Image (cartoon, rainbow, N blue to C red; front, side):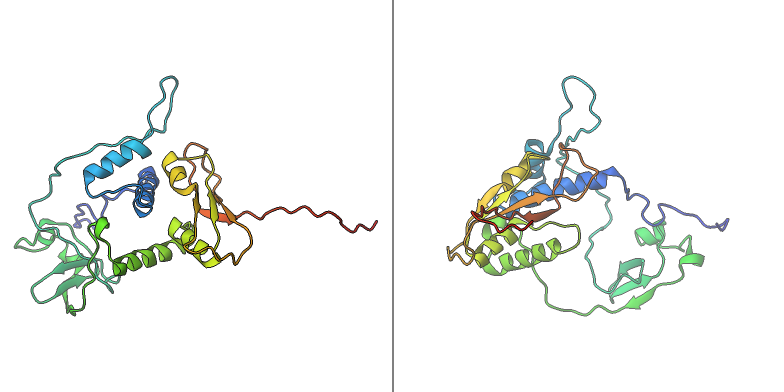
Length: 264
C-alpha cells in the first residue's frame, strides 16, 4: 500500500457479510409471503415489528442452552445525518464505482473516496485525488417514471400485474421457489384443485400460508384428479426448527392394477 494513501471506510466496509444476511432474508421472505397472500398488512416499521414478534421471533428455551435466538427491537426515530442522502438507482452505472449528482447531470469516476470533501461536497481537495483521479460528466436522459404502489389496499389492475410479473421473474431464478400466485396460475390452467402440502418444519407462519388448498377460478377438469404438490428443499445444512423450503415437487398418485402380466 502506498504510504501516503489514507483509507477511511474504503469501499463500504460498514457493510457486513455474515449470518445476519441469512437471518434478514428469512425475515423478509416471511413478511413478503404474508403480504402477498393477504395474511398481513405491513405499512410501517411498527407493523413490521409486530408481525416479526408474532410469527418470526425465536425465544430462548426455559431450560438448557440455545444458541439460535431471534428477537427484534423497534426504534421510533432514527438519527440520520444532516446532509442529503437521497439515492436513486440508475441503469448503466456498473462501470463506475462513484457517482454524485450535479446540476448538469452526474459526475462519475471509476474509484470511490469517503473523505469529507467527496462525501458531503465540502470545498477543498480530495485526500486521495492522486488515486481516484478526476470526475467525468454524464448526461441523464429524461423518461417515463413508473410509480410504486404504497398502499396495498388500493392496488389497480396494472399495479397487480406488475407485482405478479416481478414475483414470477424472481421465482424463476435458480435457488428460488414459486409462490402461491404461481400455484394459483397452475390451478387455473389445469382447472383443478391443487393441494399444497408444507412439511411440519421451520417457521409456523410459512406453514400457515403455504399448507392449503388452492382452488381454480373455473373447475374445467382438464386433468382428472386433484394435483398434490410438496414444498421441499435440497439443502442439507438445516435442522427441522429452522428449515426453509426452496422448491416444490409434484406428488404422483398411486393406482392399484388388478391384473399384471408376469413372466418368469
